[in-house]
Image 1 (cartoon, each protein chain N blue to C red):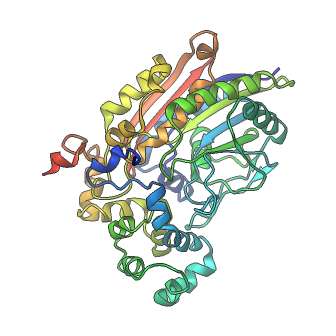
Image 2 (cartoon, rainbow over the protein chains, first blue to last red; image 1 turned 120 degrees about the vertical axis):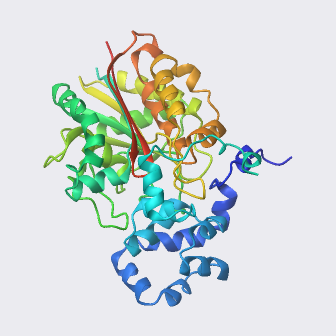
Image 3 (cartoon, rainbow over the protein chains, first blue to last red; image 1 turned 180 degrees about the vertical axis):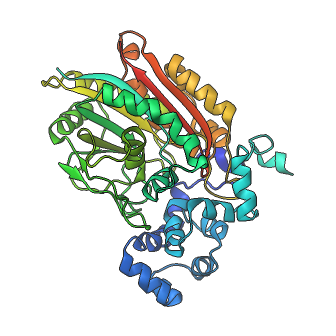
Length: 129
Length: 284
C-alpha cells in the first residue's frame, strides 16, 4: 500500500512533503546558512566554491547558480528556504514568486493588483491540457 | 481564574512588515491594507489583554529541516525577532509569559496533544507582522505574548480538526490557570495564496469569503475540511488557514457558552502575493 497523495494532480504546484524534504535536505540547509551575514558575503564572493562545501547534487548546484527556482523546487527545495537566496540577491518575495510563473515582474504585479490568478481552470492538471 | 476574552484572526504577509519598517505605509497600495486595521488598533487599546496566545508558523527561521515540530509552544521569558535574510525587523523584542505557557503545556499534553516545548527561539514575521498590524509601531508590545508555532512548511500540516480540538484543550488549560488574566488568542496566516511554481499568485476570493463565514458560524463543520481542499482551492500556502481553527476552538460557543460577537471583518487583495483576511471575535 502506498500513501495517498491527492495533491499530485494540482497543476503548477509541488507540495513539499516528507519525500521532497528528504531529497532537498542539503539544498534547503544550504539556503538556511544564508541567514548569517558572513555566509551571505562568502556565497556572493564565490558561489560555486560555497556550494561545493555542501553535499548537494550537481543538478541542485546548477539550479541554484541559474536561480531557477522551479528546478530547485523539483529537486526538493522549499520556497521558504529558497527565499534566503532571494534575500541574498536583494529580491522581494513577489519577485521570487513571479519568476516561477513565466511572466515578467510587471505582468505578475499587475495580475496580483487585478485580484490574482483565478482558480478557474487551475484546480486539476487535466484542465490545463 | 484566567479567561479567554476574544480571538483575532489575520494574515501575516512579510511584505506588510517591510512596508511599515521601510516607511511605505502611506502609499495607496499599502493604505488599502492598513485601513482595514484602524478599527482593530483602537479595539486592542480598548480591550488590552494581559497575555496574547499567538498561533503562527515559522518560515524556515527558528526551525530548519533539522527539527520540524508540529506544535511548538514558546516558554521563554523573551524572544528576539529573527534575521530572515533581510536583517531582523526593527520591532520590539517579544516578552513571553513563561508561567502561563508552562501551565498550558502541562495541561494540553495531559489532554493528548504532544507539544514541543521551546525555551529558546527567535520569532519571525509570522508572529511580528500580526503584532504590527494590531499595535502599529510602539516602543514595546502592549503585553506578554506566548508564541505557538505550527508546522505548515513541510506537508502534512496538522489537520484542521486536530487544530480545532487543540484550541479546545488550550481553552481548558487557560480556564484552569489560577490568576485572573485576560487572555486573547490569535490565529494567523493565510488567506488564499501560493508562493511557488507556475501557479504562484493564486487567489480565491470565493473560498476565502466562505472560509470567513464558516469560521464564524460553522467552525465545527469547517474543521473537517481536508488538506487537499486547502491546497487546490486556496493555494499551496493557503493551508496556513488551519491555524485559525486553533484560535476558533478556544472560544466560548464551541465550549458550551454563548456565541461570540463579530467586532470586525476585513478582506483585501492583494498584499504582495496574498489575500489579506481579518476577523475579531469577542466572547460574551
